Length: 113
Length: 115
Image 1 (cartoon, rainbow over the protein chains, first blue to last red):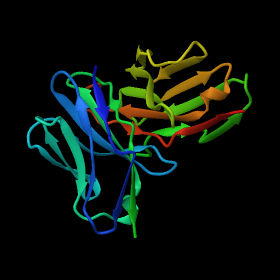
Image 2 (image 1 turned 90 degrees about the vertical axis):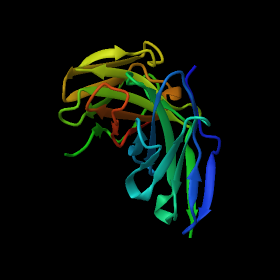
Image 3 (image 1 turned 30 degrees about the horizontal axis):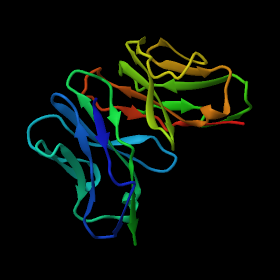
């Protein structure tokens, strides 16, 4: 069965430090991978996606993610965290022709001033 | 564009009452999704419409839940009768295409509390 795992419920990082939010997936076939962010009392907002091509994907607000096929991972990264990055982050996967997202359970990022 | 619009933003009702949640997708988007978010179960896809036609309603929890999309600019999710376990945040999302590489655009959600 297809699945997405976000192994950390919460990640704490100091402002200015690099951050990583982890995501691994298990699908049969070639995945399309997404990161979304959810701020309090808001809907999910798209950050970035990997479809094909360059394994390093750059997205909104200085975030990037690296697709690693051998490790079946798609970790979200940012070189220097901001307090305003504090939010709930979701990894999601779809398979080629399908509309259906499989979401991870979410990771709460807390950036400390 | 105003984005996906949902109403009401908050709904408090009593068990047994009918609840109707409303969604206006982004103009030109042909795919519409209803999700439910709870602490226990995370984000669950309830139903998916493509070109106003329900394609996948396998996530609708039971017959008390129903959804319609009478035209390209409006959808409703109805719960009748409501129960306390239906308390959750309900999101509507739309997408310009029905492909797996399409980004979904989420509305702000409706927080439903059933007493």
